[in-house]
Image (tube, rainbow, N blue to C red; front, side, top):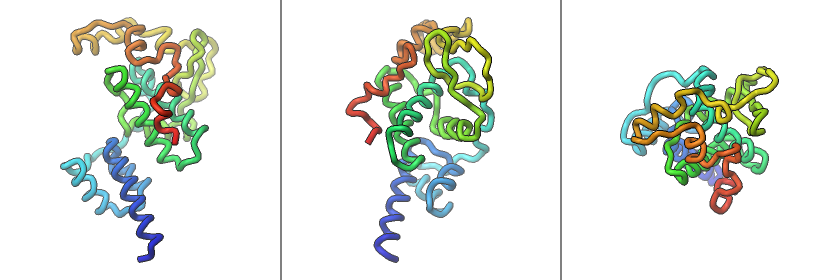
Length: 206
């Protein structure tokens, strides 16, 4: 085995470790990592302590339209788009660093991530397949995830026009009552600034 191929295999193993730690499913690992299925399964068991979960990947765009999921999805995809413009790395590494940045922002606000890695990856695929788009809110000018080709005028985002019961179920579980404004403030995304520029040391930009 040549030195080049050894280094290449090391990089693939490092990539697999990063993805597994973030919660990537086996189907995604097989499509993005140049290792055999058997090696990926062994690596997954070694890192997670359990076998990879079975089942189909998410296939519907509707999940991203619900109130809280739309806030988090929009937050992540704006970060991903920012990273894609300002980075010359491979797409999979942009995805990894964008998702890590999303987790950092959520943790910094003492909130809970709603968007798992599988949903994040699937959403990027939906954008690439022209099934989703970013629509600009006519009130706050933020960009939010929406169904593609939905060009209705006067679009209003889920923050500017939250559903009547937004946040009540989650608030009850945490023993606190928050409205839409409170949830947005907790995430640090008022006005959909997303705090990308405020990430410590430009996290994920290098």
